[in-house]
Image 1: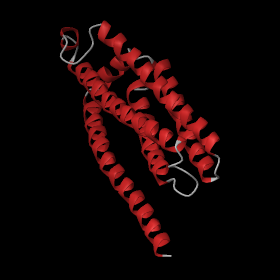
Image 2: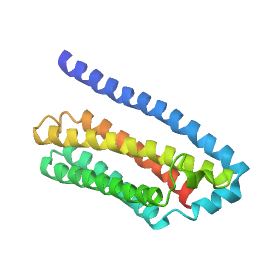
Image 3: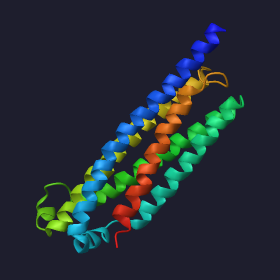
Image 4: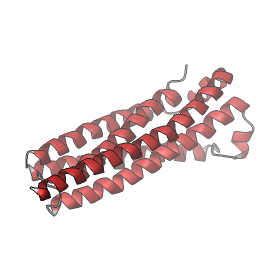
Length: 202
């Protein structure tokens, strides 16, 4: 009885801890979003012009990819709760694959911009109007920070995949996978905001 109560407390504590961590992440991105809003209000026309140079197809594709990965992650958790280890592993593997595809597309996007001389403090960028400089500065900072979170999430998901395969994540103990899912859903949610801010500026 005491063991069951302790396990429940540990599970609740881990979940609360994850939500607190995500709250600090919301504050971080929220502050940057507010900075974006201020600069966009001052340089709306130049933000729009710079946004036209971004690859909207790549941005839209990455949005679909991350939303799909959120679905596969949720289904993976549902599967392990039902005791279906094999299905959970397949769905976790798909989530990991989708994360890799997202990073590959973002790498291609960044590479194209860098090849055209558009990167922080580059001579080409510094010759652009102030609003476009600010736009691209925010673009690299915000998508770069998000990309870092994707890489971290990819590492966590890979660890959870391994733990599931070894039986450490199972129908009786899945809090690690559940918290990993919360983190991954947060990463996806951030991109849902980033996509219209940079690719659909009007």
